[in-house]
Length: 163
Image (cartoon, rainbow, N blue to C red; front, side, top):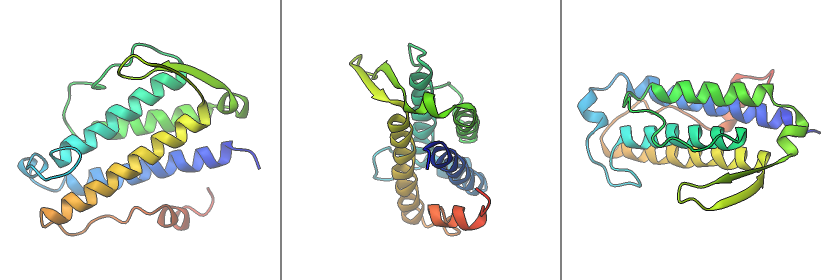
């Protein structure tokens, strides 16, 4: 098996999971998105925008574009996350196996230089988003929200059997 189908599936899963949370939280009052909750980031909005900013940063690193803008943009609408998830998915669908297996040099936000295989960078990016979506679930429960979207990979796989 090649790595490309796995990367494509994870890219689709990432966009799908982010979309589920954005669409669910867009039904809540804006003030709720900015209500402080103890977590890695102080609010639901800040957590979702952190995912956005990180996806943008990893896209830049994968493509060898520097410097990485942080934040990705000034707009604080949670829906902006979906633009970056779609761009990342598009980049990875266009990538070939050789590119995914090649090494990229990049600098982290502190300016430290690193070299890493691209598929490893991609897996980190998706794992990072999964971690923060888990925090969003806890934050939503803390705020008393219901209708929390299922976002397990297996749910995605079952609902997209052709992928």
